[in-house]
Image (cartoon, rainbow, N blue to C red):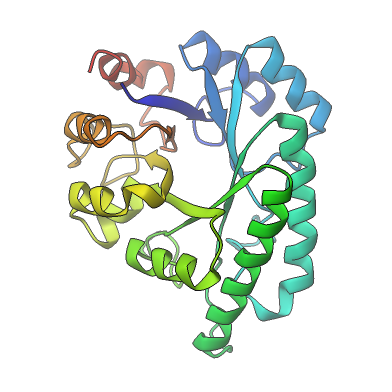
Length: 260
């Protein structure tokens, strides 16, 4: 049976962020993820998790000026020092939140930088992050993202991600496989998941088109849930979708998935 965690950046946005923990628990979730914990005090987040008996599954490394359009800094040669500072900050939060998985967003490839230099920067950065995280008992994942939603994003498909992990040479880097992004970029979801399963440490979902809840688009999610179970996937599936309407009203898919 799949294990789903609520992405509080996307779900229950009818209420302020700190109230979403209670909403997730009330609707049957036992775990959460979200993009960034850093705007909030660690103690505040820990209190919310404990009060509502929730586990913190995943959050991202600091990703630059998000409001200004940045989507990660790991491939930016001029931001290596900032990246390393972000690794330390992420570890500090993850330890407090008892979170053992952190995602690295590669960022938008800089047009003025040679692609080989951007690649070398990204590999060096994830190698550094993986080493520091491993010392803290935390695993690192990297995520490929579609270039329709984020034009110019550096990391765009599963094969590329696996090759960069191999080049980094660390056993503490895995894949965050986002079904929505990879349906757009490469399709062939079931075979790709099967091929790369040993490296897939976290899965995220949304339907396509629209990035809404499962059942609103073209992706056969009941089949994929069964497929993941049959393959022996034991990780979490993060619900990183934009509710089409009210979050709670759109959770019928979640109740149905519990019966699979």
